[in-house]
Image 1: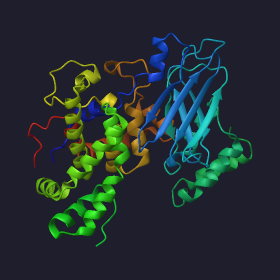
Image 2: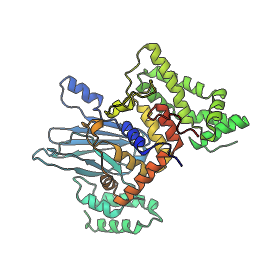
Image 3: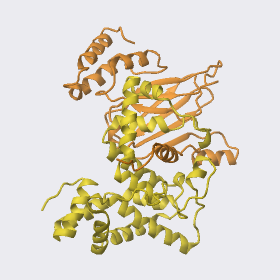
Image 4: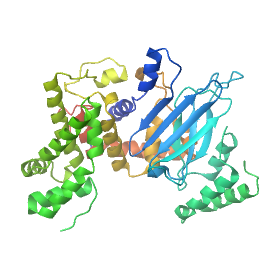
Length: 190
Length: 229
């Protein structure tokens, strides 16, 4: 059967949809008026339904994620691909990633998490992914956690695994999640 | 009669029930479903430069246009079971917004897909394409259509991550996207799994009538008569 859209067309369409790379209005205005830097923001529409704010200070960076119901209690990985000069006291290169846990309590219908990355000045919007326990591999998560600049505590991660055990019922890797949980509880994983 | 209350699949059944069986309950349910799209449609109108109160008025007008019995009969006759209420509403609103902007002589600069991507090419055939980077509501409709097609959070995230640029300064002609290996790392899944799911998700989208119609409506693809059934 003939495809409705070719692969090339689809790639062009997705590129156009993603053409949201312009700095936010606040940033543009600040630049025009020669004001101090304003936070970078990006709002991802439903069904992703997430707003990302990055506020680079002189030495630290504040990251704020605000999402709808899907983000309730979610374990989220954020990654900055290019972090040349990102560390305030020394030149560094390469990517940097962190994990954070979204709250389970909403405020005005939104779930918001704010973290400060000490000693890192980051001036771009990170890639953001929500870990889906049903599909994620515990070993992959463990490996990424070990190299993360910022991550939840072992206790918080155990709470996240417990909260998702029901979703893991019947999956082939439930035992591996339980093994990771055990390692976390013994303080061996992070 | 009660019908499946799902936008898309359910809506087409409701349209059929109303047009074919003159089912008034189905018509009422259609109105309810349409109202659920108000935020996205208002956002679209505002994204085109229509001020807030006017945007809401235009959306109401578009609802009236879209839900006229003769209008529903026309789209049923044209598309049959493939009819899509999202696209129908959007088309009506788009017409209303275009008329509004023309009257106010405040039509925003229009960008073709080529200019959005920073590539050279012939102007697109449709002269009234909305500028995608100005259309918040339009984006929401697109991603909703993609989600409706894929029906899976993980696949949506793979598609999202693999096609977004990773730096804010890059131009569209120099897109710097995550590789599927990096996407896999972000989602803590295996590289093989990411590759397989990407392949399946893009295949689904390429064959999804709803997504195809939305792309046609917005002018991102030119049918040119090649894909008419």
